[in-house]
Length: 97
Image (cartoon, rainbow, N blue to C red):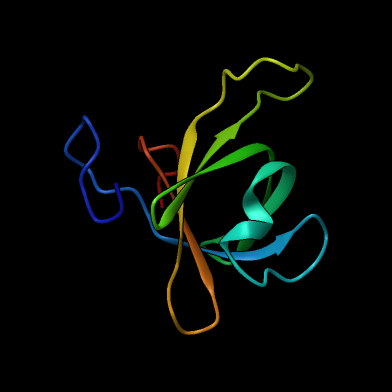
């Protein structure tokens, strides 16, 4: 989960969630169910399409592969940082900075 290394031993980057469903995020509940999420990684915005399920104090967001309804994309953990922002991190090392 957040802060842990993936299977390769490389920690995935922590990303800021900038939009949920085309709007600024207001809380973790925005991420529940089918939606789009925009995350900032290395100065670039990436749009994720998928669905989120709340699990305690995090949301597990299952990204869908482009052009399909299958849940074959990576899973992201999304958390409330407590300072008015949401953060996201791929469970596996999806993005290499």
